[in-house]
Image 1 (cartoon, rainbow over the protein chains, first blue to last red):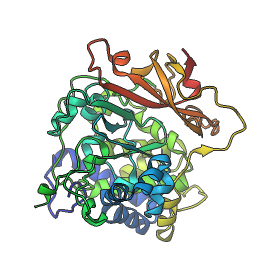
Image 2 (cartoon, rainbow over the protein chains, first blue to last red):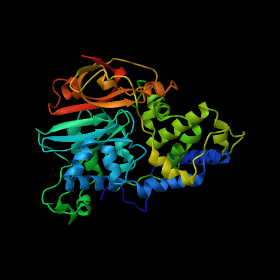
Image 3 (cartoon, helix red, strand yellow):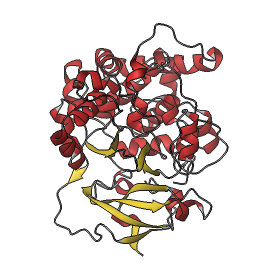
Length: 211
Length: 219
């Protein structure tokens, strides 16, 4: 499972550089709380929501349902937002979701070159690399090079379609369903769906990867 | 604005570096900066386009040397300072030094789930007719506004095809300046990779953007 697992240790970043920012954030929170503009308990709920509740497991359930249920797949491709709401996901940074499907002929990849637009209700908050310069710069003119950074190579004749999220539409990639998964339950299929496969920088896992 | 945020097609940043088992936040301050930014939207009264402009509107060297949440924090502080909600001496002191300005609403813990669920849809009803239809050839205008725009530099002047008509949406170029929502028709416009990057580009590549009608002319 990618991206949304929790770990008890944090990497040690440059403390001298970050301590100034840490102090500044702490000072700001105190000022805003004293002024009554923010309730720290609301901050805790916001953090808990995106650490524990909203993440790529949501999107994986949507993709698995699309793989298993042809009528759902059709609804999802036709109008993403209500189809995703059927599974229970909606809201901020997912007000207008468009699902795009990978096929043997076409691979989709999603980027936001201008900032960090990302479908929060189904994927959670974006990983650092999605928001950082190397990906934002290169996804639109060298997507195969980007895929190589992720260890993914596609056939040379596969069409590559990059979606730059410049407005409030948010894109969700439906990866190709792996072979050898006929008859699998939605729950089991969802285990094959990685975060990166829903951005288009990865492929779904194969049944062998689960072993 | 032609800022450092507009990165599509730039060279020299090196490879993408995925972080195995990446945590949602890297350290406590990122959590608090993220949550403060979301929570201040309600009392602050700004819109998402103003927030984006506040983040991108800084010297390119600064933008490129800051982490993502450092940019969010800087944008948040700018928005609050512009509205007199907080000042530098208060942040330096770590305490409020002046009475609070009256604000409309403060986000309560009980409000969070509903506020996130409601989100901020940008589609608007309209009586106007869309100027373009799927299949039309369009050229992205060459513009260089000092203010916020969502037309990336790498498509300006390039010819593409309208792939989808997406309805009428709040226009960031107006909304970011406090000029109202000014909803305009929005289109997904698809460009051939060679039109954007030259003849030696991978012929299998196409790139789309979502573009409001004022960004486009018929080609």
